[in-house]
Amino acid sequence: MAQKPSIPKGTRDFTPSEVIKRNYIFDIVKKHFQTFGFQPIETPSFENSDTLMGKYGDEGDRLIFKILNSGDYLSKVDDVTFSSKNSGTLTPKISEKALRYDLTVPFARYVVMHQNEIDFPFKRYQIQPVWRADRPQKGRFREFYQCDADVVGSDSLLQEIELVQLYDAVFTELKLEGVNIKLNNRKILSGIAEVIGAQHLLIDFTVALDKLDKIGEEGVKKEMAERGLTPEAIAKVEPLFSLSGSNLDQLQALKELLKDSDTGSKGVEELTFIVRTIEEMGLQSAQLSIDVTLARGLNYYTGAIFEVGAPQGVRMGSIGGGGRYDDLTGIFGLKNVSGVGISFGLDRIYLVLEELGLFPESIDRSLQVLCLNFGDKEALAALKLVSALRKKGVKADVYPSKAKIQKQFKYANNRNVPYVILIGEKELEENSFVVKRMESGDQQTYALDAVGDFIAAL
RNA sequence: GUGGUUGUAGCUCAGCUGGUUAGAGCGCUUGAUUGUGGUUCAAGAGGUCGCCGGUUCGAAACCGGUCUUCCACCCCA
Image (cartoon, rainbow, N blue to C red; front, side, top):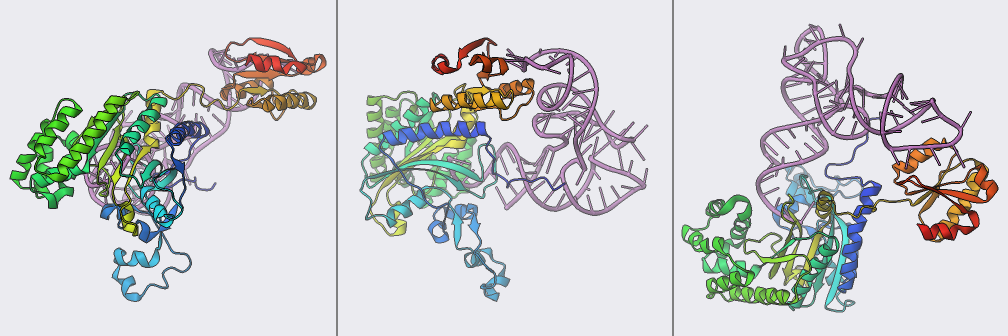
């Protein structure tokens, strides 16, 4: 026998039941994207390497799947490069394309290429797979879907507010209550770095700060020291660890802390506006909280930073994230186009819904009615009946072969079919059919020309 | 990329310090039941023990490599 087939690390097959559940999430997300006025686009699964490389930092470059050139890709490499065994110089010679790493950079590329056809502000959504050569863990895969909604060409803070509402709308309809939408602002982080005299270490500072919930205050201080922050700077960060009270209380404290930084003050002002407006309008099921330690995401965020945490008690990292990037298209030569967007982590949302049992009960009911097969003549009558049902939109099927009735019933049972129809010799003579409700075991007889009565009773 | 962990029947897992013919539950097939499933009873099928190599008289078990799973880092959805 041939060796058992397998699929690459970090990839998955999806069973019918899984696809249906994933589509359930997709459909709800899509529906709300559309009601918020977003338009769909799609981009290729692979891009030119130079579109992607260098956009996600060194770490990101490492995680990008590169595609080998076609043909005899090694023959064009000069001997010096080849024998150097330096993948940094060899890779560009043998690989000119790479798999999409996220949807944001391809979107920026799209906006620049189509700038003359686009009416700004442009609100787009995109649901497509992306690939990362990461080491898999729970809820982390090498191939996974991103669901992104971004707005470009508007620097209005109303967009941030709408995106919070969008998160709330989607998670409310998914019945996932109590998600925590965490909000921060890059300008506040810059402002803090400025105030403590560590502008040049902004990234190191934020990466360390971001780990607060994981490694605690002492851990963060230690990491900051390791990353080169002076003891004086670290001491000045101290007040951040003890921020408490309502969102507006925290913002008040930050305002005081950042009064000497123009950038920081601007950030506080922006967040205050967002928080005030949201509080005024209210959210359906999510909660919004300021979190100054939130720094995740890519370096291109310049304003708001979002991250959505799963409800308390669920062991899962973030199930969504996003932010504002003032100059994303700048890397492709289009200046002064501001963008802000959010992303839904479909795979993780799936795992959370599964864990909490929040998928609708009858979601994977792929068949409503199964007609048993008693033989050629009977099957023909069954097929006619099934056609009539299908025309009315009922998911119906005929068992294709004259197997033992016991086996056919078992099949119906395993497929979770609620109604089984029997048309045997006797029914054929009487122009009738018998409907068995699988759950209760009740049987009822209908006339073949009164299919409507049965449909009405479904 | 670093460190660890896992892999035995379709599925979930037992299998002792290396020792005959590798087990269970569930599922599957067949029958009790030639027109009635989900309950019950009986019988049956199904495994190169992830793969490659090594140690040994003898390996599912020990060693090395490799792939895979999950976990902690890095980073991130």
